[in-house]
Image (cartoon, rainbow, N blue to C red; front, side, top):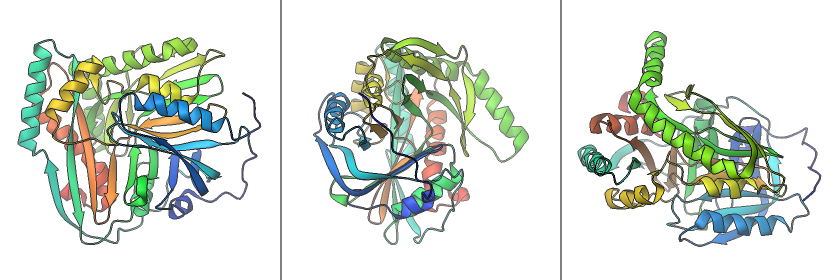
Length: 393
């Protein structure tokens, strides 16, 4: 497929303006590095009902829809973790590209947080981790990711655009997203640290993460925490399972694939992670970015391994529907290029409430209390963006 890319807009708006231009009915705003995209005008919705194999089915429909755009179309949106609800994929009438800013303005929230309701309670989550460890000991799974949910209540409606702007300011290296969900009654907003796949022509890149530690204000202690994470056998084991699965998933599409020989450190404003950079050259007949993402999803970073057994265990141990948490969010164009990230550090905002999710990878050697603390650290990203002071997190 050949096409000519549109010339860059030399008068493009800044990212904060793109967030402010978000439309609750059909809006999508995505920012990762220098790529800042916002849906504008009317959108064609690509309907993909809930059910098994949803990402692959959605990718096929998106490919067909983009074939009709004379090579200039872009599809944007979010897909659930395991097909439990409708995918939200839109082909907008036009795409506005913003100026790359590393940090925007962090406006004050216009609401006050009045309640935090965890599901499950910390003690119940730790019990679930113990049951997961029993399944690991029995050889049922090697790794499983267990998530928690946190309902945040405010005294007035929460403006998801302000949450996005605060995330953009506080997490400048993340994949920031703002997606109107079906019907416009709720919005998915977040700042994911983990890129599943980026495709640029014949080049493909992935940056799987697993293994987490909370950062500290003291610079010396912060570096000590990072080194402890790098040296931790349990964290390295958890990370290796993810990196190997992503590399194996990319291999059929690539004529050449380069994988970091050892896990390294990467950080957000609040957390340290182990990561492995994976770069490859795609075969001439390789598919588009969303189809490649579908082949990788769900990775052991959000599900576990073996995938089927881990997903079944999640269904037994988690008392809620993940919906879009741990799914995919991103874009793909008519040339097949695109970026898809895991839907992490996110909230589903509806009226005066926001539901957050956070998960932790459970492997042999995991300690329930420490896994609970890891989810608390991950919640802190969204809580700060919602206006909860650090002392309260």
